[in-house]
Image 1 (spheres, rainbow, N blue to C red):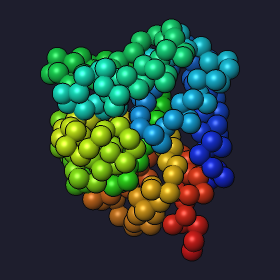
Image 2: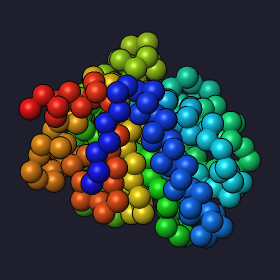
Image 3: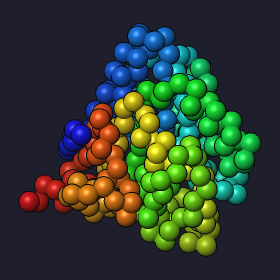
Length: 244
């Protein structure tokens, strides 16, 4: 595990994007193509924005997979992660080699699983939630399943985060369930980069890093066992580990 701390969210995004771009350029040079998993949410704004401006990436050789999506939320809804990725990433770098979105149907999950496991994922951009979740694997996360995607119930802290980020008008509007890539599947990525800015993430970051054990009560602790994991923080999200 490597921890990189930037002065602010913008510097974090640029630094992470530069690293991701270097990985993509290297992998494409070696294999002729690259496969990535992208996460969403407010914490990824600056990284994705900076990544779309990186030069020298043969995006037509990049295949993108989607991490998670709410159940029952139309793609036109402002909170739809398909809409998020389409507008903030896909439209800006098109054409891509392929785009694989989660829509929550059984047929979609089966097809995603087949495509996902056809060959290794070169890089996963995996956020960490305010409750320590990775994707929508809220605590206590299922660390046992070997499925690629599962239907999960969102806990109150997770739903409050979605409300606090401005995606929904009220708690009643936040969906109760989502389809999420599993913790197991996330860990199959060849490399994992986690971009975690903002003071609201400081508690989750501190619990993740100070925990001596890997625990499904703080799902992000699992990332520390990955052989190629880089955690990007800003001064706000790193406050709990910089204070001692």
